[in-house]
Image (tube, rainbow, N blue to C red; front, side, top):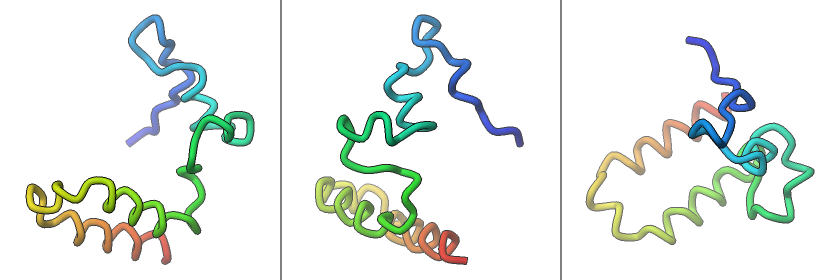
Length: 78
């Protein structure tokens, strides 16, 4: 599988905005616009908990979500 380079998905062709592209590739330049840097793996557990607190009703619709969270956390720590 090859990774997608989001820089080539221009907004006028249905791609991403330049702000979001900077979020992906150059977070320091846009940190004032976003609460979290998704590349900061040390902050991932608290980010997951924040998301879960904001979406309390989703737990019943996807019972394996907590298991997926645990697997993700374990894989990042290896």
